[in-house]
Length: 101
Image 1 (cartoon, one colour):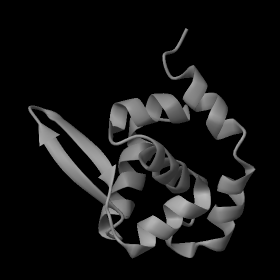
Image 2 (cartoon, rainbow, N blue to C red; image 1 turned 180 degrees about the vertical axis):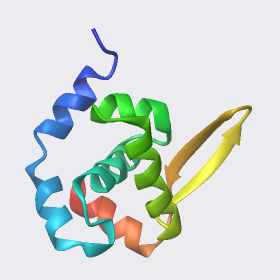
Image 3 (cartoon, helix red, strand yellow; image 1 turned 45 degrees about the vertical axis):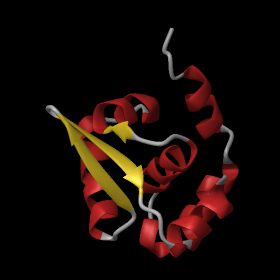
């Protein structure tokens, strides 16, 4: 049984995530919006854990996180060989957090 079962359940029940993805071009797809949701609710994740939670490949998550980095929505922190991502604190992400959580 996955330790991320509750988080996966939350993601499946968040119809607001789909609506927000349609309204906000900057986070324009469901995967990037779900990553933002995860990082709003939890301080940080690495790509491997996000891929497990989202039931997608590491490659898809890595590509999505790269876009979020380019847009200035996430920060990264490296610990040994693992890179952790967190939601950047700015006006946009505050609004995003208020909207999707």
